Length: 97
Image (cartoon, rainbow, N blue to C red; front, top):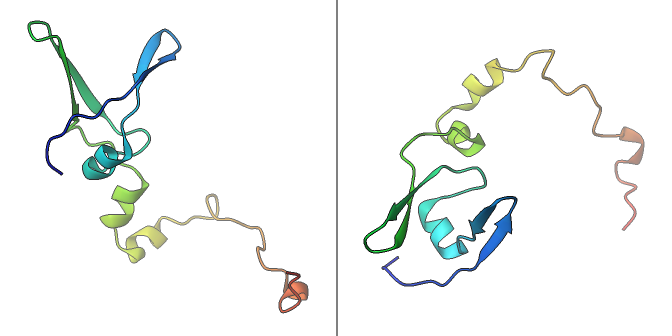
């Protein structure tokens, strides 16, 4: 993605203002809800500079991409395991469309 100017609108969020990050930029930087960014203000040029933070905030995708299935399954315990039966054998093959 080459540098380009994208206009975004500020929105009130409590006592702060939020800025929407367009999908094209979000996708390029691999930002998700909860991603960390650093915000700097250059008083001389009156520019706001937003950068993806180098501080690692592990999320589900990071864990999945860097962990094999064997390691993940070792973390299953009776306490964190689902006990519900998700398949009702009486209805298999009798789905209503």
